Image 1 (cartoon, rainbow, N blue to C red):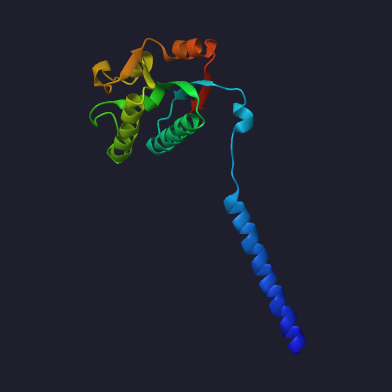
Image 2: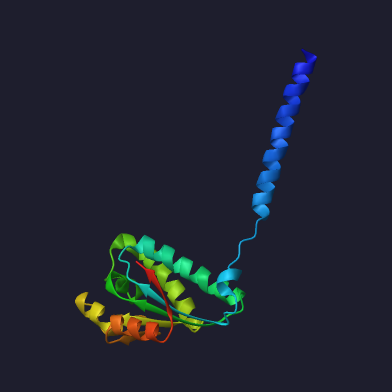
Length: 169
């Protein structure tokens, strides 16, 4: 009986040790993008932003911020354009009258990120056609937002210049 208890206790301790070692190993794992960035010195990226949902847009803007930081950490020179069109246009405007009351808090957070992006030298563009379709007065866009005639043409132009297009919709 004593031998059975000892075996049982040994089994439990061994299992806990293995689980702890596996968890520790997983926590120490380092992930990188070295294969993708091999011989890459310059990152040219066009983020195509077309989300009408404030929570999803805020999530994408946070992911965009993390991506920009990781490109910087990788030591890459970068040229980044964030192109807004469609419903996403409502969230880069002055005032709160283009969004619903429940979207105001998210809009403020999005605008903080947009201001940070602008301060970091990222280009922020707004499609004039989308603004007109949404009845947004062009002067109501945030400072630092460049209005372009047609967001699709801008996207085509940047892609033709070799920019990677990242769809954020």
